[in-house]
Image (cartoon, rainbow, N blue to C red; front, side, top):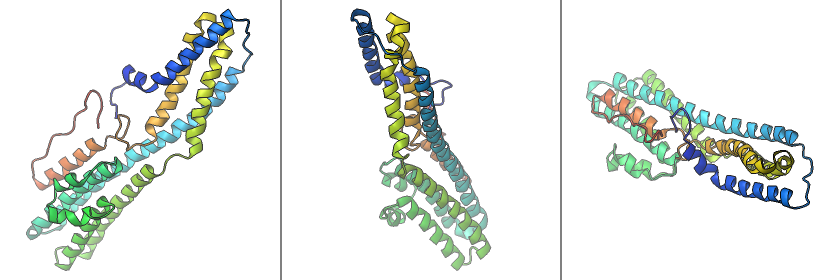
Length: 293
């Protein structure tokens, strides 16, 4: 996630320079044709076209931002639920269940790190083994959804604590309610990751934006003359930049500079839960060149 107050011009240029360069070349061709050949551009209702395109792009960007913000809200709920499950384990379980306390807390840290890797389509085995022994981690790693396997294992350990008399059924219900909140948040994240925007939301704004950029110099050349390449390219940059914003935000877990900072939030959970155990915790993640991962 870019945390600077304004995006870097280098980043913007890197994302739109190819279509912008093609647009500039096309602008120059139209301008040269108008000036040096007996050709008169037809009058085009660019204001009408631009207004309609703005509506399409507005729908696209709003839809993309809603997905991005929902991803951030779900991870905020995950942070709160992780703190709650650690606090419940620490306060409900007796002193003789110290190993179980540590196991539940460490499993939750391994769970969020695994979920982060799954959403970003990255390997997750080593993240699990950083916090759990191989024997503790293998049942979850053998499953298709390793994060859900870790969560199921935590639920079974809570049930075992009830059978041994370390927890009563009221305490079990309270902890299970937190696990349900965690599972619901994971389901929402997987829905965002696995369900793209409908094709019409992706295809038509892109088509219309590029078509408008093609028509733009034809409609402006009679008014701007030699300045058409400059004016048309600047106007095209506005539409291409808005189009790119929608593409950048549509997948909040794609591991790019525009995404929800999953690594930083997982580190926040790791710090809070390790400190709840009284263990030494790593420092928070710091931005790298204005980007928080």
